[in-house]
Amino acid sequence: MLRIRRLSPDEWTIAKRLRLAALEANPDAFGATLDEEAGYVEGKWRARLARSDCATFVAFTGGDEPAGIIVGAPYGNKAGLFSMWVDARHRGKGFGGALVDVVIDWAKKNGYSELLLDVADNNQPAIALYESRGFAPTGAKGALPAPRDNVTEHQRILRLQTSWL
Figure 1 (cartoon, helix red, strand yellow):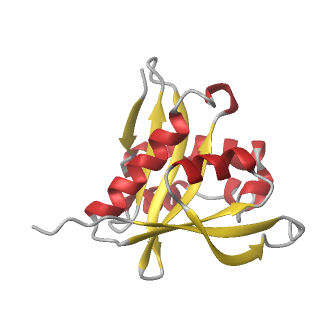
Figure 2: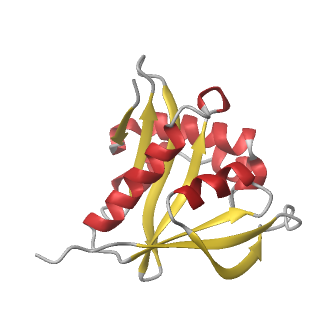
């Protein structure tokens, strides 16, 4: 059974473990590197989770094993989807879609009308997932920082439905 929960600052070790696993397993999918974030101290991890304008969500298996992570945070005046990763052992089981859906809900609840993300051009599984949720290319393109500047990426946007009360 899949369960998703927003992490609190006291759960910083879960965030750290998943984030470092993501950076090690898929280094070309993220702007940061394992070397950069492996040296973060407890206070930095706690501070990330304590920010009121950001939300870190983790997907857990039925056995309470952390299986994936995602972050919703401001992206200029829009919402951003960051740090999306699912452990390879749990891919293809709905964890990724559930994580994306929870950030879409987070963005709506926080009054954002648009949700942005960047994805590597060669990451077809992630692109397919984002397309299935309605994210469309914006035309903006870029590359990861050196030494991975050979990895090109593009931006995608989801225009969110807002309800008027």
